Amino acid sequence: MEETVKIKNHHPHKAEIKAATRKTAKPLLYIGIISIIMLFAGLTSAYVVRADNGNWLVFNLPDIAIISTGIIITSSLTMLMAQIAIKKGNLKLTSIGLFLTLLLGIAFFYTQVEGWKQLTQQGIYFVGKYANASGSFLYFIAMIHLFHMVGGLIALVVSLTKSLLKKYSPSDYLGIELTAIYWHFLDLLWVYLFLFLYFYR
Image (cartoon, rainbow, N blue to C red):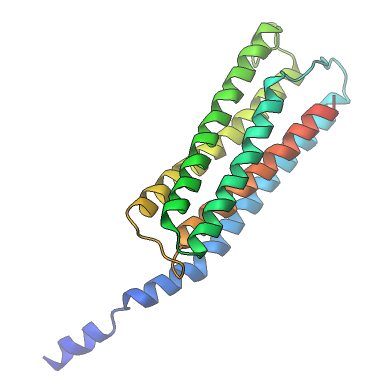
């Protein structure tokens, strides 16, 4: 009986598990962000090297790319609204902020796909007989960014669901905090990519 009690006492409490999660979650997220930065640094470096080798088609980005950029910047503002709201204990405004961010994220996704359609109408293809390295690079970079955006959208759905279920409080909102860090990073990454692709031809 005494042995059983001892074993039970060695089990970590929920508070200890939460503390351990809080301690490791952010560092792990930052490691993931650093790896993504290295990936895109490599891609944009390869873009520059290939552009300097000749046979490089110069074309304008579709107009909808500017709309995409405006949408994603706005989504960071709505995400910030959710962060401020949860710190004040306003779960309703938190949920509204997360919901708007999710909608804007989906809108960004849609405008990106529409942008690809506009590119094909200009004769800019990802692969195939008429493809050029400049177009292929643009498609690939945008697709890799969207792939990471999917993770952000999933995180938003999870955070929104938990917010609606009142699982967050001013003293416990790690999920929203992690989602916000990742989302703001994706927004900044896109702004960098847009400026890079817009000005470097």
